[in-house]
Length: 165
Image (cartoon, rainbow, N blue to C red; front, top):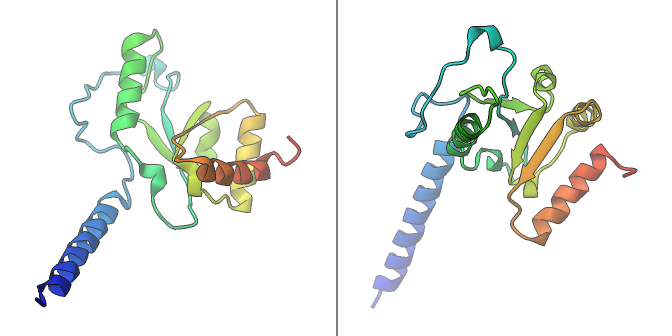
């Protein structure tokens, strides 16, 4: 009859180990991996090397220290770039970028993507940089909110960027 506590402890231990493994797998995805998970690559004409659309994912801090910015990485980035190349006349860089809002390279790219910002927490220098980026014509696509609470949190943070709007 004493098996119940042992079973519960064992199941909880396995669940914790699985969570640790999942967190380590996603901790630092860095640049695009060489394994494109079946998404084809293509060449960019060297004459247009700097004149292509590049998918840029924003790496951000969240108040619970989870790497939510890495959700669906790299699959969604690769697929978006591939489909844009395939279905439009745009020239697209097959390798996206991961940048922080304070990276000076940010201003080289007119389109940036932020995923699952429901626990986002902007630092003051990020607020200044994002405001400058957007006021200079940059476009921020924000995606994947899980409920009103996450939307409210993002709204609170984006109001730091444009408090009077």
